[in-house]
Image 1 (spheres, helix red, strand yellow):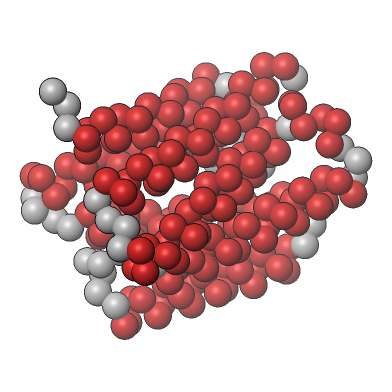
Image 2: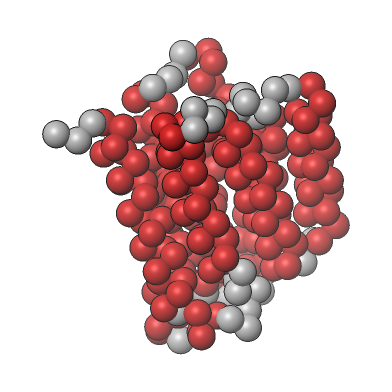
Length: 208
């Protein structure tokens, strides 16, 4: 029988793989938009997931090395993307600067083999605020009626849903002693939901 770890990984990997497949299939419909680089980002996510699982088994390398790299690259990617779609670009530039400073702090004062939480918290807060600004801009432009075919809307919704669940989990993990299966289950649910919205963002392009 499959172990709990493998089952949770499969639940998490399947929507990630599906999102990458849809990104490839629907590429002609968004290749000239601000979402064009998501095809590379989703491919990168799959590589990270493979390395995060295989390296500790094959090379006895801590998975934190892989996931800290993922935090840096994915965080910068998402914030730069938000900068491209938001009107308040200076706000996002501030978030990018703070995020880079938090990474610098961890590089100098924390071990790379331990999962960095400070950049994760900074990133979560930044994306929650950016998502709120995005929806505020959307309301101001009276474009809410078109949300079903707005790719940006579904991606931002996915980010918002993920980080709303992820931020308290990271902040309270130490106090409630969440670890192992009790930490993996909510993380898996959050990731599956986020990639479900990303898949929806590609499916909505068919309607266009």
